[in-house]
Length: 393
Image 1 (tube, one colour):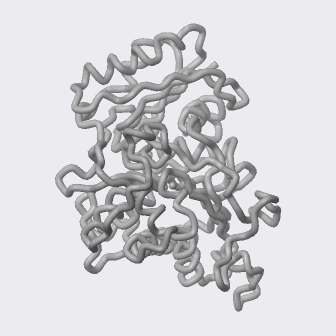
Image 2: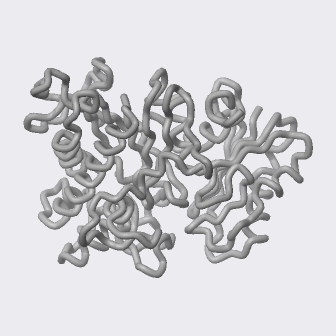
C-alpha cells in the first residue's frame, strides 16, 4: 500500500492506495486557516497517523510553488508554509521509505492519465479550473516535469496581454486571472451582477466541488462524470442517455473543418469557486461563488452569461495555444468551474475552433475529468506505483 496525501488550502486528505490505483480507505480534515507552520504540520501528522502502518512509500500532492523535487513547499493559499520542508519532515517520519512530492494539479493530471479519461493517450494536458488554474503535461506517454517541476502550468499562459486583469503571479492577462472562479465572480459583481439566492452557500453545502479549490495551491476536486455528462470521446458515446451538446457548427454537429480534418472535439459537464481581492488572491472564504454565477448563467442572466463566456473563450484560446505547441490529442478539464456546463463550454469550443487552425491541432479532444474527489490521492500514489512513467529516473 502507498500512503497518499493531498494537501490544499481548504482540505487535507490522506488515503491508502493499492497497486491498481484503488483508494482502499481515506480520511479528510479541514485545513486550519491562518495557522502557523507547526500547527499545519501537526494537522498532517494527525491525519496520517491511523494510516501509517505497513506502507511501502509516501506520495504527496501539494499546492505550489515548491522547490522540486526537494519538496520544500510554499502554497499560495497556505501562508503558514513558506519553504516548509515537507518532504524532509515526511522522510524523517518514514525512514527508509521513498517519499515523493509534486504539485497538486500535476497529480490530478497524472491520475487522469493513469486511471481516468486519459488512459492510453500518449499526448495530453490535464487541466484543473476552479479557485486556481493549473495543469500537468503528458508527452510521449510520460509526465513532463521541466527543470523546476512546473511544466504544464497552463494557468499562466497569457490570453489577454493588452489590458488583461492582474494575476496573483504579478503578471497581466494570464488564463488564471481570466478564468478562475473567484476572479469571475468579482468581475461579474463589478459589472452589476446580482447573485441569485437559490444556490446553497459553502455553509450549507460544504462538500460541494464548487467550493473545492485547485491548481495554484488550493484544495481541488476534478469534475466527476454525472448523469448530465454528454458527448463523445474518440468516437464512442460516453453517456447513452444524453444527447450531444448543441453548439452550432460545433464538434458534435459532425461537420468537418475545411482542411478535411475533423474540428476539435469537446464534451461537457457542470461546477464553480469564490471571490477575489487583489492583496489576498487565494483566500479561502467567499461570499458569492462561481457556482452561483454558473447557475445564473444557465438561467439566462446576461451578466453571468458574459462572465462565463469570458472564461470559456480564455480557456479555449489557451488550449489552442497548448495544442499547437505540444501536438496534443486530448485535454481533460477538472475542478469546480469545469462543471459550469454549456455557458462555459460553448464559448470554449467556439474559441478553440477559431484558434486551432492547423490541421494537426484540429484533432484535439476536450473532455471532462473522469475521476472524483479521490483523484488527488490516486495521482500522488502513482508517483510511486507508476514511477517509471510519472517520476524522473
